[in-house]
Length: 269
Image 1 (cartoon, rainbow, N blue to C red):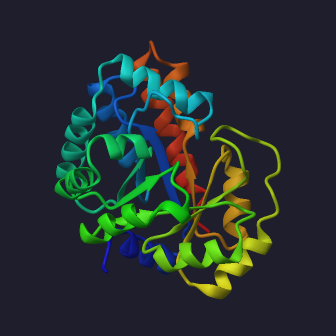
Image 2 (spheres, one colour):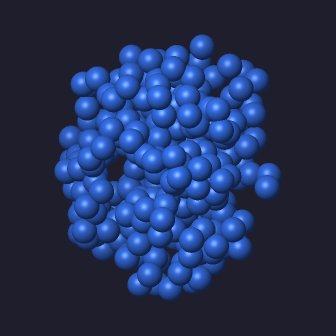
């Protein structure tokens, strides 16, 4: 199916650019400032955006993203308010792919069908449920397809051939390749050698590959793109600016703008 992602990847290939997808938590640090942060990030020319739903038990996340969840919850951000923000964003930005990152409990507690219908209603492009392994994803995938939403799957570096084939067959926008095992967070150290898994995917499919987890510098982004990976997702390094400048909104926005602009610039070959 034709998606905003496919248009973005087509244009990036034509312009010889890598894809840059920033991540922030919906409602962090509060409803109004969150909208302002996301607006500013999009206006820096990023290619897509991934947004989290605050969750009280975010086990797949490291302390920086966990704290962003807790700040949003403390500001009384509910699931309804998250969808209110998504509705505002889609109204303002019709062309940019918007992806949602969430946990299975939040989907189950609202009813799977109802949750995916809400996502369709705000014209969402993709959903990643971080704590659902590919082996248990069929019900989520079915609802995603029915609502014309791309289900994104996480591909760990040590994935087996059987599960890799399943991810490739079920992915319609991109494959989320992990830099390493563990939880999200800033990491300046060398990642695992991903050449083996990368070659496997490239031989089996032409679907774009986006690398995430631990990416926090321009050098890392350039090295990743030079390894023939199509793009990167950066979360913790951006969310860290919200935490650091929590009581200085102007400085916070300035730092986030600068960071996202620099990261996008270095995806241009």
